[in-house]
Length: 78
Image 1 (tube, rainbow, N blue to C red):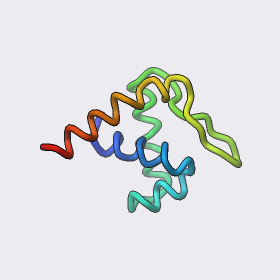
Image 2 (image 1 turned 90 degrees about the vertical axis):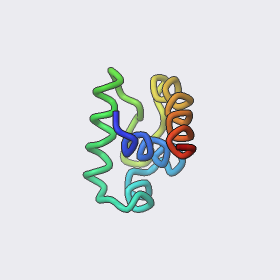
Image 3 (image 1 turned 90 degrees about the horizontal axis):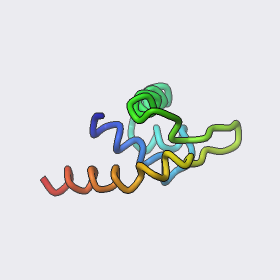
């Protein structure tokens, strides 16, 4: 897991849109999507449910969210 993936995950949780999250992170949408897919592979399942009109956390996404918040906060404090 890379801190970049953690950041993308948390921004996507806030934006609930791959397009807006990518824009906010300053990356192309395919790059953000790929980073999230790799994070999902590392965590053993989908973290987000995707449809044409919306994005939302899965149960697994909600489960790992607090840990990823702590990781982000810890790296910011370093």
